[in-house]
Length: 82
Image 1: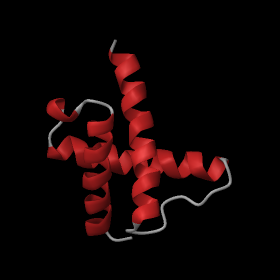
Image 2: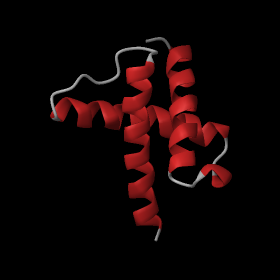
Image 3: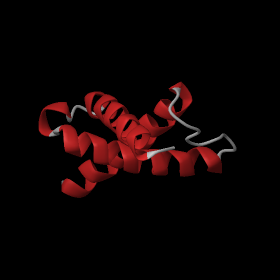
Image 4: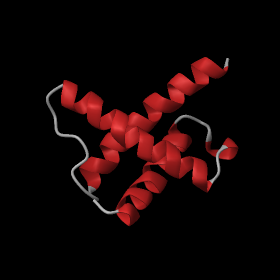
């Protein structure tokens, strides 16, 4: 995947994850992109551990994987913040 695809995937999945986790009002666009990209790596790692494929490109499966990873990241960040 190219840089533009990673930014698009990161923005979309970071935004969806922030809405799921109730952090949308606290995060801006750059934070959503960063959370989404890191979430793609975390989600890819977790999904490979259970035997599924990770991020495969700019498609629905990759968005699901990165949203799950971003939710995990936001959950851990929330626990550390408290």
